[in-house]
Image (cartoon, rainbow, N blue to C red; front, top):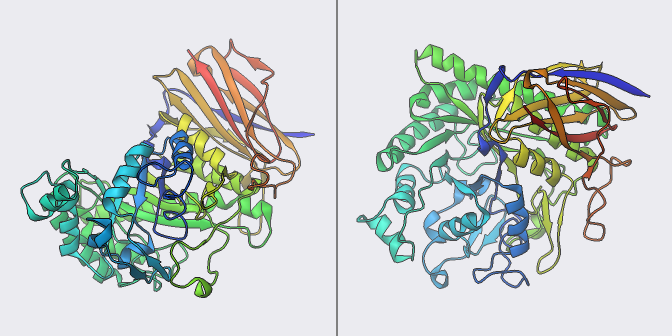
Length: 503
């Protein structure tokens, strides 16, 4: 048995060019993301700086373009000066966001070094919780000014003659959250963000600045927060942040697989608020979106009291299943469908903490199920997103109506002469026969069909079984290369990547 769905894409109906930064990620000083994750001096693969080589290799394969640092909640209590200069002189501090001890062995310069090795730009964040304008402008001067001033010369004295030239900066983090150190009202934050942005740009006019939206769509402050904040800082910022996480605590898989519809609505709502303020202020400037925290997160709210004041204790080390990978895949497709508005997105996080990569301190590393849709989208989702015309059978779930079994999008990489179709079959018991019409491209040739699927949706990769859930190549049958039409079978509950040479 199977169900049928169709997809039409036309090369002349492009939505937007993909900003590669939507495949970004996030490293916060949280859990074992830094200490034991990217930095493990005693590991067999560690380089002279203590960076794990096996982790770097896995990240390079992802081709991650940008990594947000150093937080997250961490940044709202962070004094950046504590993490620069000779390591022997750095202070150990109590870190209040996650109740740990921060040894400050890794700071701004070390992370810049690591990011270069990983092939990624740094998305820097400034502390608008306990600090503000002065610390932010000094950090910009330290990082980006060539020399001849106190802070830039201090960077040079620390061994970094060339400026880091960080371009994209977050103006704080989740400032409406009562859990945040130095949480603020919308008016307090909007005024501070505006003045901080203004002064940071006086130091470096080329900065791209991200204002904080609500901590999540479920916050009582949502929408009003965005409108108030933007009314106060619209002309001095470039992007507005969105944060969202999903889980299957109710063990309702059909409802869980529909969560990307919530993401779709969330993005649309925030874009509308931005447009409202643009209209209200009669501005010619269009604001874009930064989904700089998103993922499946299962262990939110667990107690940390027993781990208090440790250095790099295990935190939020979720084990991801096949169904989690499907949700991540659906969310990646949703991001592509909003490529005209979402210009930055960060899968939170990259190593150990709700991450696609897991390590053992001093030991093994393995890839979680969610690594693979992230990998495929980053490698093959470059180019122009095409407006997809989809027809699919639908179902209703607890929180959603008219959920299509087919979630799909196509990206045209004109330079490579390829179209890549990303598709998820949400049906839990039936394969889906997809008819894809690409006739505007003329003749087509299928290069490969990558499938991620497993009979057990709760299957996961572990240290003992690191290859239990991995992608495989599927033979393509029924392809009509002359007419630009593609008939292809999508396995039940599967993530699919169909790469096609066109023209």
